[in-house]
Amino acid sequence: MAQSAQLNASILKKVAMALSGIFLITFLALHVTLNFISVISENVFNEASHFMGYNPLIQYVMQPVLAFGVIFHFVMGFVLTAQNTAARPIAYAKYNGAANASWSSRNMIISGLVILAFLGLHFYDFWFPEVNYKYIVGNAPDATRYYGELVHKFHDPIRTGLYCISFVLLGFHLWHGFASSLQSMGMHNKYSRFLSKVGYGFAVIVPALFIIIALFHHFNN
Image 1 (tube, rainbow, N blue to C red):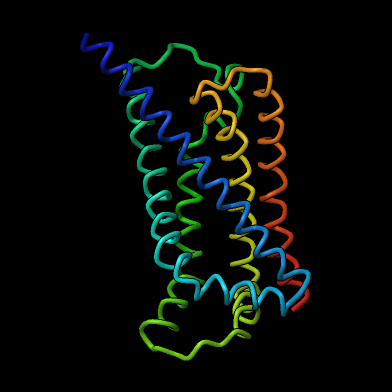
Image 2: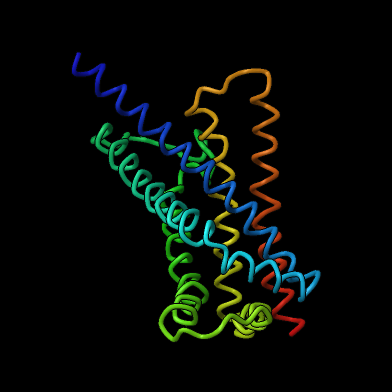
């Protein structure tokens, strides 16, 4: 009975991890769409960013939910990693990881830690200045400032390089994470193969778009 309860708890943790991952994937799709507008139109990007920055629903409901989702996803990732390690306390005498799993699946914790560090840099670059501008200094709303603030961050080649490396590792993380989420939720039907292909495409296209945005603003401004 205890073993069965432990198994059920483990399954619930994996499902919760999968659901939080899918939630964050949805956010990434919205985030890359908004940021890619900056490559197409400065004015439209400013308008969209201003709407997002001062919309009460987004600022006081969706943003806290997003923050909780990010924290929950990373905490659950560490918990499941520790749980899996504890379940196999004795290392195999001979283990060829590459023969049993892809690099992305074997190094999810590494790519996750890099992404976590990147989020710290991203908050430092954009979220903290935004909080300072609106709530600490109390500046009046300026719908024309967002494009300039974005471009300024990509003048530095080192920062741009760090962003690009982080986006590559985000791609590896998504490559395994999307398929793992489907598996955790028991999606083994006629649509699962199609959804897996969609996930692999997402893992390539979204990080690539983020890299294009960073390089575009670095070399064109």
